[in-house]
Length: 210
Image 1 (cartoon, rainbow, N blue to C red):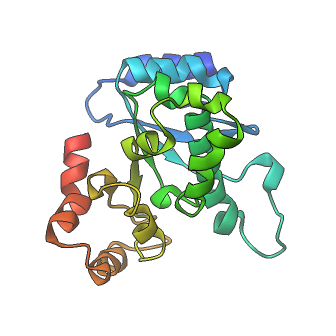
Image 2: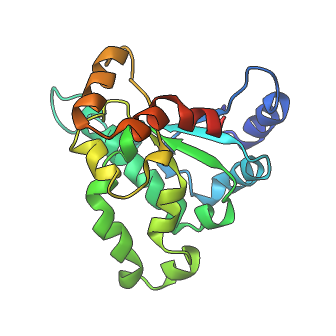
């Protein structure tokens, strides 16, 4: 969608939703240092919710945090961190509570979110106002989202995510051309997630979602 232009994005959503070959819509984790739970984006998120749309969210480096490490691509650290930022934005803005019908898919096993889970769950203790915005509890919203395995099919990243969400919320991804299908499948096999979870991740979950 042509974000951050809300009116144009709403027009594109109206034009394409439900058309043959359109499985869902792509958003980026941030636009001009505003993350997906920002009030500016609420009209689009509300319409995506009304339509029960599938929304794939891919990370990007925020304007604030580009080129921080000389010689190290922003994709190495900032992409994963920005996924955690936009997850926090959706939960702690009340957007996830207000828009439960959006079927979100987040890249790379949720980025750094699993490593930050204790901070996510204790945030309402530090700021009680967040309890009103996320009344079901942080974990409830995080477990309602879907996540892919792209560049994360390993015991550290995906293993951490699977401690938080059931395998029914995980979809196969490769991040081609940076990783290939054979490599990612072998890494999943090495994790020994079990035959039922393997079938679900490799296709059954996507069939149910789409």
